[in-house]
Length: 304
Image (cartoon, rainbow, N blue to C red):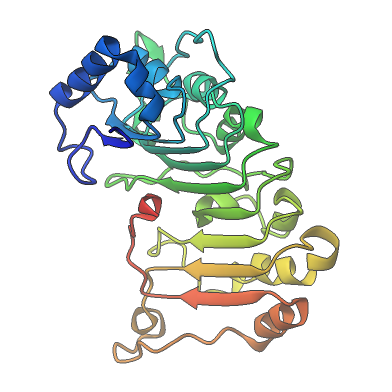
């Protein structure tokens, strides 16, 4: 019987046929009781209507949804049982949905526990219906996720690669009001921001109960981890653990930069040793610190 339903082939959301989705919906219409056995669904929204999302979110025992290419500019119509969906794990890949649309679907789960959000900034630019679209804004995402701030435990936040220009930089993102969040995985540009002065107050924008933090650098030519000014936010986080991040147990840094490129020595590709002030701060705070350089630029973070 149904359990995990994939409307794509493998993990390639472009290798997709509308017929898969149409057949699935046809079966559900013919035998609605089969929906009681569907706990996990993966679907591509490229050529599908918002009605499909309503059907998937409203399945009676649904637990996990993988939704690719949800790019709505405006909010969809609220389903009758909004806020009552049983979805606990939601993965939004290639997601270009704007704030109103994102706010709407993120309000449908009764108590979302895990979210993987991969923003496609290209969908946040240009014009739509004669209107100029706003640039992507980290504060807009936090507002959109506000309905889940008391239940969300695990958040992964990444961005699609842009070949022409980078995402506009925002101030450091603020998750301080997310009272259940214990695991946070995100890109450096979201956590620290750029061009907004020294990143000394990052600890104030993280939830006090956070236990694990993973930070990925994806713009090595312009923003490298192994630079003196990049270590400030990291050191302060350890020093202020007692007052701001008492539950923090582990911090992991991933960056694609190569030591040989940084130091002018192509043969030097060994493990990088952080300054003693950083190591000592983390050791004294009881926080495990791991640093992985030469990490693949796009490691498929949302696949885990």
